[in-house]
Length: 401
Image 1 (cartoon, helix red, strand yellow):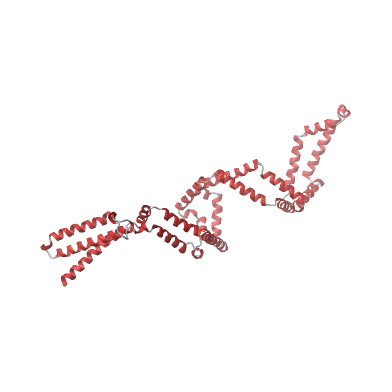
Image 2 (cartoon, helix red, strand yellow):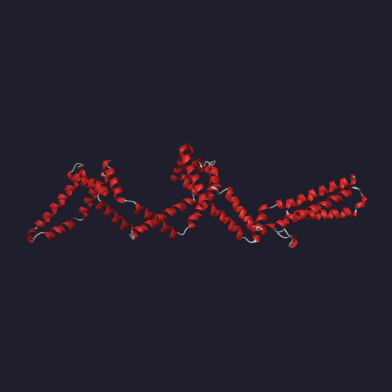
């Protein structure tokens, strides 16, 4: 467009020279000459005006030219002020956010993601992958481990365990655990019969060993234990099962009310958290979660077709149908946006201002000139045409007088 505008100026100069050379041959050539002459003046005037905004015309330090480079710092301050006054004031953000129903929009997309923009899905996927891959894994893993450990440290674990055990006993949900312990005891006894026999043999007197009664005693002990375990497994009302349940009930009460028991649980929790194996396990949890998130981010369509996709679709339908939930989410988003504007608005404004200040004159000139684009050259073209039409009018008035 710059070449078109300059070419039009050159064309008007050529028309002017031709019309001036042939001036006396036809009366209409006077109008042509007047048009071309005025068009050149208009083109040159607008070229000077456009150029003066961004640089010195012909490199000459003419006063009041190169306006934007000379005032770039003031422009940056004004731009930052405009951004603050029109976008980053909390009440302005609140008013604009009140018009948005983000919950319903998110619900529609989640309920039917294939009907939305695939470009949006792919772009979100790429962004998620880049973010996950760019994070410092060692540092982030340490942060997550630290956050998890701190959260667990804040929990008074003993009362929680006590209430959970008490609720399980009240609803008989402890019975499978108790039966599992009984079966485990049977397997342990079966696997360690030789140990029991060796203990009886070592503790028996020489007479028992000489007569072989130690072996009989061992068999009686093992048979008795096996029978007791079998009876406990078969009889829900077995006295020992009742004693075990009484012990569990007492344990639930102690976990909630006994300071000594609570202290033991806290000490055990602290020891467990400080164990390197536990810390490695927590790190492994994060790595597994990160790998799963990367798999989902790299293949969002597969994720949306599976169980996670069904859950997201159900969430989308709920968001569309539950007006109360919509209001809650929209209110949360609005408050978050307003809070961000209040907390970080001045920082953003300062960043814009300092960024513009740091640009050199050539950078800001080039960026603004490219941003305005073709319109600058249309100013020159329009100046050429309007100037020519004014020249025609003046020439016509001159002839009429």
